[in-house]
Amino acid sequence: MYKTHTCGELRIEDVGKEVSLAGWVNRRRDHGGVTFVDLRDRFGLAQIVTNPEISPAAHQSLAPVRMEWVIQITGVVRQRPAGMENPDLPTGEVEVEVNDVKILNTAQTPPFLINKEEDVDEQTRLEFRYLDLRRERMRNNLILRHRFIKFIRDYLDERGFLEIETPILFKSTPEGARDYLVPSRVHPGQFYALPQSPQQLKQMLMVGGVERYFQIARCFRDEDQRGDRQPEFTQLDLEMSFVHREDIMELIEDMYTKLVAEVVPHKKVLQTPWPRMTYNEAMARYGKDNPDIRFGLELQDITDLVAESDFKVFSSVIAKGGCVQGINARGLGNYSRKQIDELVEFVKRQDAKGLAYIAFTSNGEERSSFSKFLAKETKQAILEQMDAQAGDLLLFVADKVDVVYSALGLLREELGTRLELRDDDVMGFAWVIDFPLFTWDADSKRWDPSHHLFTSPMLEDIPYLDTDPAKARGQQYDLVLNGNEVSGGSIRIHDSDLQEKIFGLIGLDPDVARERFGHMLRAFTFGTPPHGGIASGIDRFCMLLADEPNIREVIAFPKNQSARDVMGDAPSRVEQKQLKELHIKLDLDEDLPESF
Image (cartoon, rainbow, N blue to C red; front, side, top):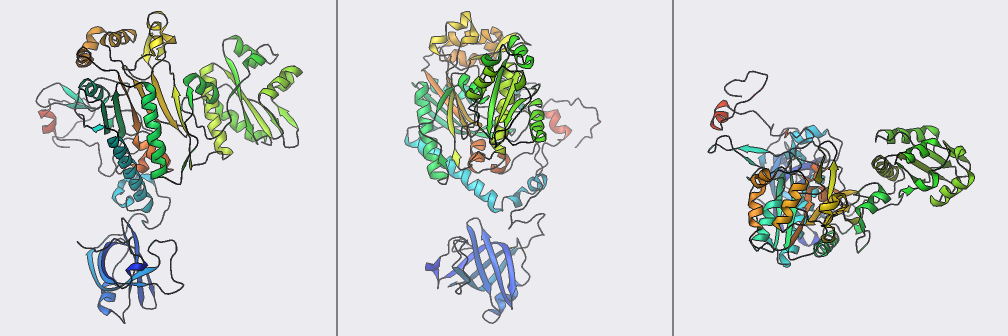
């Protein structure tokens, strides 16, 4: 070994020991002939010192060393002089007086500082990701991710779960996003698909009698990128047999509550048991099915109060089947007209036609875009429902229900930011249940599954499949955390007849269903137990625990916003020989060389 100790482990008890350390030069300082270097490895920093009067050879060897050079030193641990301690470092009471230096490797000047957190263009960081990973913030994110996954593995192992790997090369069975296809050389014209999730395979494991399965699974979806998406991502995949919805929810709630306490003890779970709300309740209160429950500003429905009002913007929308809902933005009553106009433009970008308001300044003065059109008793009823007080700003949207929810749901989040209502150290977990089993696709004139094809309806709602599918609820449950969906699962269909009925409702031709899912339908005829599961997005979860703005910050080697690996320059072109072996011809506008 090049080192007897890590750079982060030396303490006052080690004074007098001869040690060897190895790592990167984080910083150097020359003071009156004495050279101080902060030596860094993954575990921390250690200050080393060379004195030309004590060890001239070591001092000379250290002279050319610059930041990010890799060196090995041997020396004796000593206590730092009084007043020279560094209380911000775990090793801050000691230093190593060096008597031997070996330069293991030199380094070019990095394109950005590694020993200091600074704003660096993300493309540069991703191009030099191996340097970015040396930085303290990124190192801590990788450590957090490791501890997160290790906790899950230990927790589930103690409860009888088996970790089982499922294939990466599988059958293409579209599940909502586009598949990544892999051509087969030995079967010309045929393709594997990379799994969007192990959904079908984990159900096969339940048929196989595994009963309790989990996997830290790699998943692949060819979809447009954003801050919480990557072409390849990682999820905790979990499935159990002989369980009801409550069994899975209780397991996950206990696991993540304990995980927060152990992995990020400075953070606190907002409340336990976690609150539960139906899909309809979540939409009505927050305008979203993944609400941030750390703050209020809940939506208020005033449709009944203004249905007959003289303010035609409201009454005409209601007459056409729309609604009017509002938010009390407490503390923003002194907003200027310009600031209110900014909020108007914000909701217009969400497809709302406008934003009506009543503002009460801190001294009680009222300003409004519409209240003069209201009868006195109507206005008073609105103020009472909105619990209006001096200093409040009441904001209203009138439109179709889905537009109102979308606009006010996003406006609520914007107001939460402006009012600084979020505490990043609070974990606002909540369950959302009783989702509609289907959504209606007006263009295709068919029902689409709101979750996936294999979600079981609530048992009492099965008759609706024949009479009114819109009323059928799924045995689905989503876990939301601080305004993000971090887990989703359901009790699965384990009866082949019911599964075929669902296929028919979503317009899947029986022959197509057998071609895509024949293996599942056949398996279900061999004694399939009742089963259900859940999948948690590990990248997204770690992003929230690390207080990062996107999942790229908690992935070692992510793609950029264009789904490109700028470090390895992928995707890239391949040789014509490779394409020929795969029986592939490219249909591109440009002429391609034999090798590209």
